[in-house]
Image 1: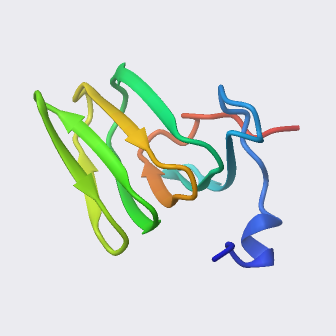
Image 2: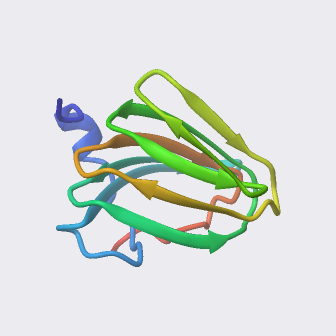
Length: 111
């Protein structure tokens, strides 16, 4: 499943991955940033932390590690990462994920 055209028409984000690895479209407000991620290749995100994050898996699989424990999330499942919590992730190619960040400037919009 592809995200609908109107979502793909949202602004792209300047994320630290090439577009052929991960593509991202976003809605930003003063209160937060909602991102529609499409993972075209397997990706591993090293341990990091930031403001609060909530996410939901639409397709594929996200293996999220927090507090030394790893859990796999599949379509229809969501996760909540409290602000400042160190976490790492492995996301399978073909996954589609919606993430909401409390930080509206977590990633800049691509010009």
